[in-house]
Image (cartoon, rainbow, N blue to C red; front, side):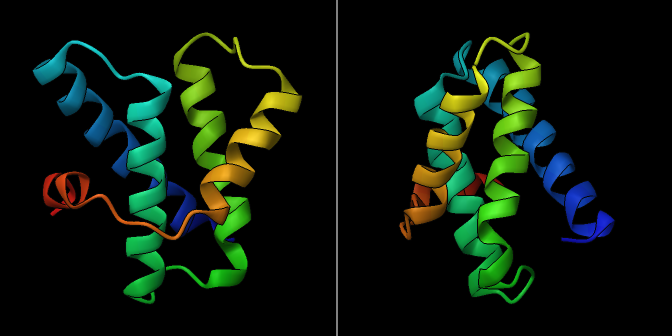
Length: 100
């Protein structure tokens, strides 16, 4: 995964997270999971991210979330969370609407 994609993912994460938090006063792991799953599947469906990079991109997003909450998630759990996100092919249309 190249640096440009990482920068785009980070920018999307920050923009979404700040907007969501300002509106709902929360950004839980569940909220993050819906965002990350939708963003990655949107990127793949629009040829912005190859399917082969989905696992790496998922892990990268999870590490950004972990950093934002003070690195409270263990490496073992980071792996489980990122795999769960990478294995999910759904798109939450409420999240997608906020991304556009």
